[in-house]
Amino acid sequence: MAAGIVFLIGVMLLATQLMGQGRTGEWPSITLASELGIPADRVFSDWVILDKPIQFILADVQLWIVLLFTAALIYWVTDWTSEQLGRLSKRPPPPETPQPTSELAESGTSP
Image (cartoon, rainbow, N blue to C red):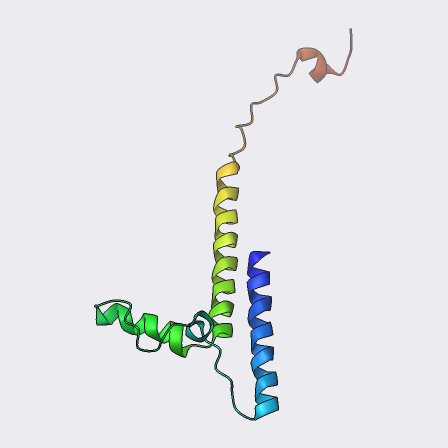
């Protein structure tokens, strides 16, 4: 359910960008940084190996792409969790014990 909601919001943002492009002729940039008011020169970490990917995701990747990947991740996690919990609840079937047969049942006569 949550994955579907996030997916739908992502598709609606894509539609908003397409309508903006049709109206003005240029592609409007809707990113996490533009929506949250994060300045482009903000440093998130002193480590370049962490700062560059964070800066890329926040300032360069369109928000609808981030939301679609988030929806896919939410769907995968809920499916995986459901599968794992389903395994825990299943028990192996009890071993079959042979039914004791009486001599009367074998002979076909009743007393």
